[in-house]
Image (cartoon, rainbow, N blue to C red; front, side):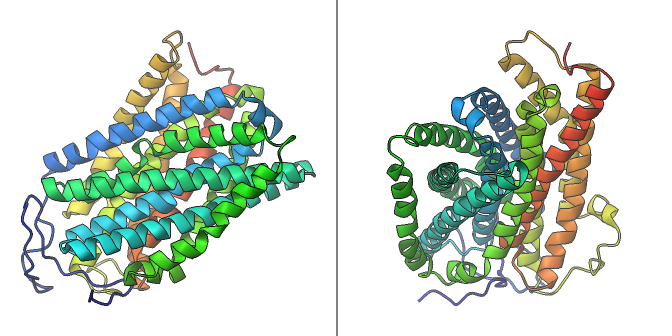
Length: 455
């Protein structure tokens, strides 16, 4: 029988990176050998850089796609779909990245050494994720409908049904595809000796935005074609996904770890969805202004990069706490969050990774800006003022998020909550809100001084 788990089960270190054969000899908590040996700065940069660039190019593609589909009839007729965009794209932080973080911790702790235990853990987590995707998709659509009604004073019922069908279908299919990929990445990282904390969460986001946005656009346009002649199709779609909920509950209840999250893991993902929806309102209102419409290309980029970087840091800190401290027990000097600069100054691996992640912002965003320039055909260049404003907004966003991650993960651990399940949804949602707000301010300032954003 598999061992009993609690949500913040202390994970005994019994695995070293780079070993193809895993041992089952747990070390005492105060042993000199930990589950994860010291990583050199070079190996850390290499492991983070490649998936970070892949993830960034995925968000660039998503931004270009969003710029194209916003002119589709369904987006013009039902503008509330734009409110859905940050909430649905943010589900990768709510679901994919939390799954990646949980499985990374399980790998580092040796809890996936047994084939039976490994597949039970994977099946339970994937079923839980499909359940959460269905519920979040439905709640996101209802939230978008409510915000749209509050803004315009009316909301036709067939539009509400279209939003529900589109959101649930997109969340379900995207979650299934990305969950399968995520499991493959985690198992592959384990076999070749790469720290999954460095690669899993950005790879989860590498093409997640693009796939999710493509599904959202296609499903919305497809359901829009049924809205007049075959409206019952929308009802059948929603009913079909809701009927699968008991099956996902039954499967996720089979493993103790996913069963606990089945009861306790809803607070962070629902709160994160609500925060992302506020960012969606900002995006919707900004795009409707012709002078600020260009923001739609860059919003997925700044939001995606911020979410990717902070998820790496959050996952690393969480794994460190699981390996070296009991739930509720904090490292020396981390009893309070009074000094946010502690995130970047220190001798530990997580202090080094915070500095590396912050230093990646400017060169990474310059690469992504150039990629957008090339994809557009290379006819215009971003203006110097726009480039400076965009980089400054992105740097502020990531700086705030990294400080918040350091504080939030330790606070959750002190309260006995598993940071792998709680921290990333909050952080990526706040990243979406911060990124959209800061980018909107940057565009507004450029418009006020007469800068078009390109030369």
